[in-house]
Image (cartoon, rainbow, N blue to C red):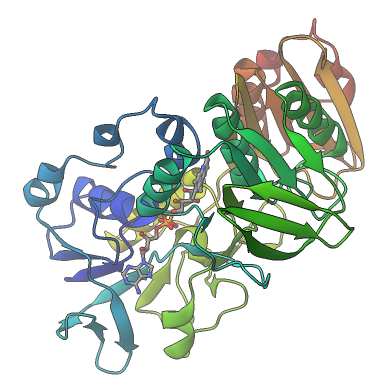
Length: 405
Ligand SMILES: Cc1cc2nc3c(=O)[nH]c(=O)nc-3n(C[C@H](O)[C@H](O)[C@H](O)COP(=O)(O)OP(=O)(O)OC[C@H]3O[C@@H](n4cnc5c(N)ncnc54)[C@H](O)[C@@H]3O)c2cc1C
């Protein structure tokens, strides 16, 4: 078992790992290197209730500050790891010192993609990944009335919903022909289109921004399809890319993520990767996966803690994700990509419904909209191999899903 464990990244995965290592009985040193100066915090509220002022800053930390001392975790806030010396098993830190490790864990997360749009660096144009980003957006919104969100994915749409709640005029500019296209099926996109338009959001599809330019005190967002939109504030919601710079420089195998085996181990047996930065072999789909979700980050951390404390455990969990927009909670279990049949349970025009996705007659995923019981059932059903639910049962609201697990 490794004596000194060094974790790079004080986000969801890194903090969970440090915590679970202690719970699993690791007695050796744990260092947590966190580039962010704030106490490690949760990101989901940043685009939701924190932005609207309905979630107090004091609730953001993942653990109370005292936790790190009590659990003997050497948390280095505001310190970045700048390089890894694999031969010497040390990392160099931004403050000039070096740290030795027996096991090193990369939990470096993801960084925002800045689309190559002229004017993307102008004052008034923001991204949303960190607490500092959210605070900067909040401050600007206090004096704004018109917001343009570039990108109709989860973060863009949650931010759009929050901005509407703050009585902003909101336009979403989406390059594709429907919302959240990479993650959800067409009926779910249609539901969210109608939800946002009902709340007064102007959505422009198949539209790319060709440039952003100052227009007096305002910003002018020029569209490639012609025309422009005037705004006080622009939010770039073009997605993220895994933070793999350290791993790549150290010569670890990377391909849109740090490549790991099922034990979260990279191409160097003393180095592991978890969370948004990692790409691992998913035993359920047989594919290499990289997911950006709290569940993956936290569950990989818990699994790796077992391995590092002497019980080698492969990562094999049903992925799940959620998004809050207005009064609607979308909950997704499994991965719907590649489905050949989708059935609807419940009425999309009523309060709650779910879409169950099948491939070759086998359940692979379910998206639930204000239907938490369906979501919980889907997670349990997907946890069984093979899942025991037919499309006919899924579509029949009289069928009790609990009978399938
Ligand atoms: C606004 C927003 C809303 C979200 N909403 C949801 C949601 O509703 N549901 C959901 O499931 N997911 C949501 N997510 C995604 C979720 O937050 C991420 O999947 C999760 O935080 C991943 O955890 P992580 O630890 O892998 O990465 P991160 O949380 O990104 O943490 C990585 C940390 O590593 C640090 N770091 C990077 N490089 C270095 C270095 N060289 N040295 C030191 N530190 C370094 C970074 O500063 C960062 O703090 C949201 C994300 C955002 C930004």
